[in-house]
Image (cartoon, rainbow, N blue to C red; front, side, top):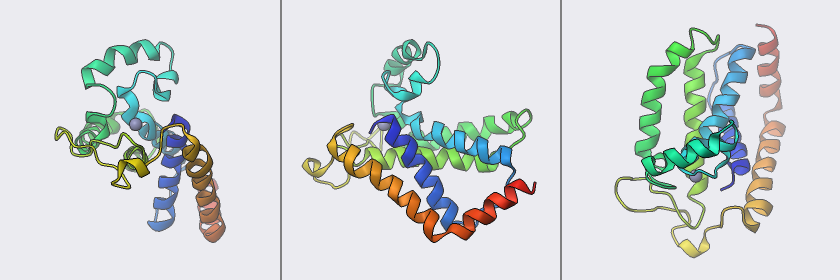
Length: 192
Ligand SMILES: [Zn+2]
């Protein structure tokens, strides 16, 4: 999947969690940091890909990507697995409390936002022909649908015409059916 689709998929996943879980009240700062963290989580698994969008987001990123990629083992390896997800979650649990001392945001919410973004990345990549090594280091790539030929190509027609607009429509639909929830959330943000 392209970075653009991953960004939107991460946001959509966060949106689904937002409408299904009873979300705690939060400050505007937490909401913004959580949105940013969600986007980073949504792109993070592609750190093993030197040409991915996450490397374009900072200066010298492509060079750093070229150096880091061989260390992680090439595209769609450790970072595209449950093992990578758990490892990232574990490391962030250790790091975020320290970040929380300089950044006034609820780090529990930020942590979940990263995880939701990360999981959305693995799920959306599973729709592509390459599949995802969910069980890495086991050398099995899993995708949906299980028949490879039925899956889609990254940056291809189906991603652009079906997946991306479909995610947009899903967000619009959620906003439409749960409008009072969003309204209450935004009002509570302003009240803090
Ligand atoms: Zn990926």
